[in-house]
Image (cartoon, rainbow, N blue to C red; front, side, top):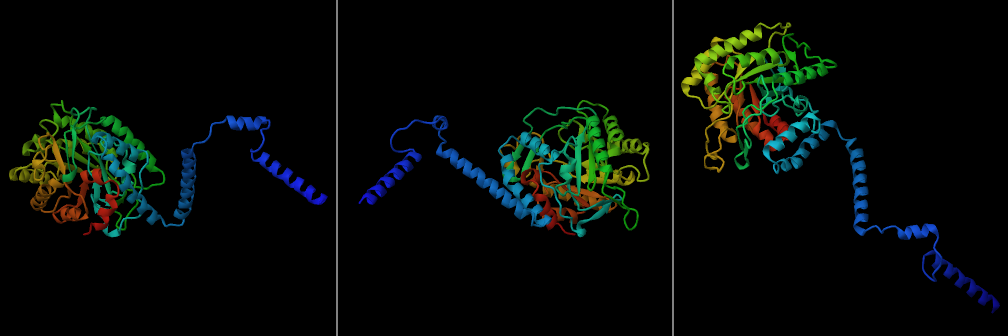
Length: 439
């Protein structure tokens, strides 16, 4: 009996001790640590969820990183390009010019995927003694100030063209000056050669050239010893597009200044006389004006001292809004003066269907994108016939997929450029076009 009473007392004592440890039972004096704990604010339930999600995300990232380390580089690279389709729609929510600046900045700072997969050998070609790994290039207008050359070439373009650059910096036309017609796959712009000027661009390209000197040979000989692999910007080919200032009366002098300052950094030079956003510029496409301009620009280029590789090829960019007589005149001048190439074409001042009925059709400026494709391709085909295939032609205007690029090539283009489709679809478009483009 006494034993049972003792066991009962011990059991009760143990239970009360346990209740005290759990914070229940009779009130007792708080220690300093317990008082501090009670004084601290309680963590809301939502914060606990946030912590849980954060830990879960970190765990997934670690697990994903571990998995990615086992995946081949080509597969991983493909994932990165496809992932840009998730981010790209957010740019559509921004003002067109703001979105453009952000895209250039992202490419300039390396916040973009980089193509690690080699181009199929069947896409490679030699033009002007230079080796292009593929015929797909980015047209001028995207990187006007040569801020993101490395990042843009890293997308897998065979070549990138910067500019248009004018001797003096200029703000361009008043804003707004870029208008999206997303449903039609088109853009109307009246930017007016807004850029930082040839001196600033020359410094950037000079710095780029110095960075590429180490570890990258731009003069690796081919089997024939005649084709130069890569270019001034490294593995890709760099074009520099030159324009004139809006207030300059002597247009030729502006182009000569551009050539003298920038030609040493270019794998090819482009004389832009076809933008509709600089008053009087398109008049330079006339036979007499074009002949005088090309002669003086060629002379300025050839007077400079060049290494064995010689001066960069000179290309002229023309408009799609030309009469048959205009096209014939340009072809005659190109053949007579041994012009190195033509880009066909710039933007159009016309408003072909389905843009003609769009509310923004009345906005002044040049139209680019899908509605331009048929017009520019028709002129490309005609120019190829007129020049008898003797001059390399770059097909530009409305290219939005591999089939379009192939149609340009079939019409006579040696190389192909795009811009508007890239602005809408982003980096993922480039590998897609190359896979679908064939000779």
